[in-house]
Image 1 (cartoon, rainbow over the protein chains, first blue to last red):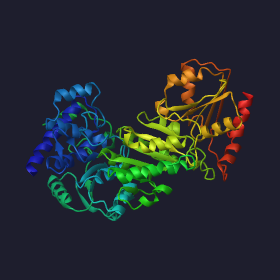
Image 2 (cartoon, each protein chain N blue to C red):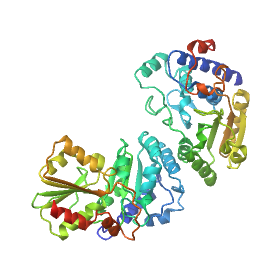
Image 3 (cartoon, rainbow over the protein chains, first blue to last red):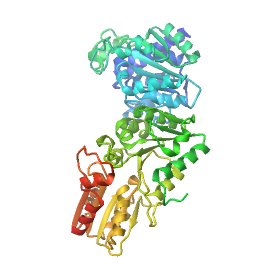
Image 4 (tube, chains in turn orange, purple):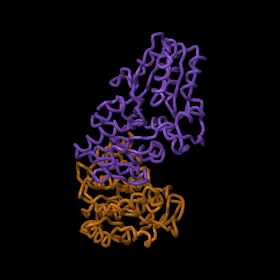
Length: 254
Length: 307
């Protein structure tokens, strides 16, 4: 399984970089920081993806990383490149995941930060299956996330897994000494708590398998690097929004 | 259910309670708001008191609705409409989920509690959300009808629910147009109003036997039959817009838009709305506050005589 995940990881990364080189606008840094998790969760069978029904019970809260999802859809041939190109040129597919195109393929409309944990409560109350969300580390400042975290704790909701992509850079600044991300605070929330290297696929896979079996909600902190894999932009605030040259990215396409 | 002597909240929530108990798919959520008719449901697993956190409340409701549940949320209209505006916009409206948002305490119904509790901007604020229906439950029969038929509604809907006995002795046209028209014998003046102010206008017109004053009660703002509305109001010479909300926060813009689009000509137009400021006046009763603000029934009467 790990071998398969690593191969797929390379493939998806290449597709994603090619999309950018061919002119698609994505947030490069924040996408690459969560790529290893997304690939492991989806190709490792942790988050279910269905060729016709799409991705259920998962909300990509840090919606600016949607390029990875697009690349996965292309890699899995859930959408052909021509159709994708056609739909992006028409403006049907763009900078947000939405539930309309393809219809009901994604669980939620992405874009606004801080909503997903609360929404997951609503989803989780209707099912015994695990409900997942991936949020950013800057996003954790949103008060609505804390309203939801305490609600999950108080009501003892057992089937929500929250993954935090801790790449230590927000849209405009480095994140340091953030009190609400300290393990002391997070460990007291009553969740099963994991903190791991978010680029170590073996570790991610083994933790996600554990999480799948755990009988309470989990909080998984992924220590990641913004722009992981492209040395020139790694941990560089400048590339939160800005893209490097096509030539530079081309060097990393295998 | 006798509708002429019951508080409008009890009519609405008693019906909701019956539907809730019969339907295992129906959830009720609140932000710690207490409603008499629902007190017995508080320990029910489908009744969720999310506590004082409106954003989370709306998010949970939308998650439930996404999975096909029928969801009603209630709380003070200000806190639901303004505090959790983005959650309503994105998670209910952009997802087109049929969540029913019941805003209690509209207008100056909580006259002692200051501007935090004055619901006088909610209509315009909610109107900006294209997918959201807005129903101002201005009358007991109307509240009865909408609450009994709530499961037939398939769109996200904001209900404004006032308090007190808001019973009209007259026939109330619920089924079409989105407004009710109380026609006077002599078509000279018309009041266009909504909600609690509709009942005040009606009391005034019938108590004072104002035979030349008609009333239009707008109650379904996104489903107004504008052609019919136009055909009615074009017959009048004098118009009063009477809104408990502010001019920018209420329905005035809908009427102003109609006037401009249809090039309607009136000899006199007067707007009686809540002032465009946050009101730091605390009164034990609504009528006194309305008097302070010169938007009460007697001020309306004087205006009708002068216009």
